[in-house]
Amino acid sequence: MKLYFILFMLLPSAALAADGSSIDVHVYINTVIALIALGLAIYEGWSNRKHNKLSVKPKIDAAISFLFKDGEFIFSIINNGLGPAIITSVKIFVGTDEVDSNLSLNNRFKKAIQLVAPGLMGHGRLSSIDIGFSITANREHKFADLACDFQNYVIKSKTTEAELKNNLDKITYHIEYESIYGEKFFLDSSNSGW
Image 1 (cartoon, rainbow, N blue to C red):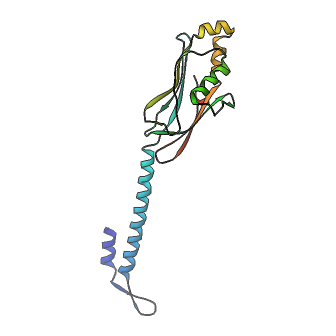
Image 2 (cartoon, helix red, strand yellow; image 1 turned 90 degrees about the horizontal axis):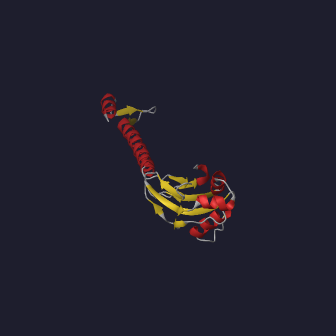
Image 3 (tube, rainbow, N blue to C red; image 1 turned 90 degrees about the vertical axis):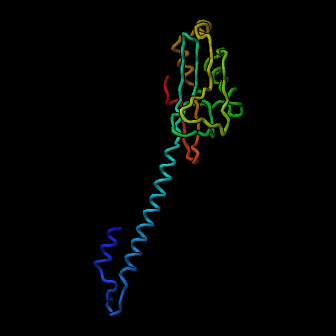
């Protein structure tokens, strides 16, 4: 704004054009200043919207716990982001093969466990996530929290603890989710380790 006043004081209010007619310099200066102000206002609006999107961005991570001695097996997802994560798709895989998507999420998870460890099914809680389900920031949601007799299973199936762990590690889930602004994100639990 100070620049405008300096220019206003230094320049005459009218200048002569090449043909001898007068040109009002202040009109041009006002137009340039108005265009600069408009550009700054547009940039500020874009910058604020970008900041608002970042301030509610979700980030889901997978957590898998396998406690052989305690007989506990947990699959869960955690929203470590700043805003809610809205689930749009959940797929469960055994290796590279998708478990039948026509089944409910609970039944897909049970089927996946039976495919990698036939006869292993403990007691516990299998949770369902439906399309549109929202996980708030800094919350954990457990797919499965199972109490299994791993030691007895290993003896009966003649496998080792490491083999059982490797078999259970074949189960992965792919979750598509979005922010409240509709930005899409993807979680592949195969990128998470034990």
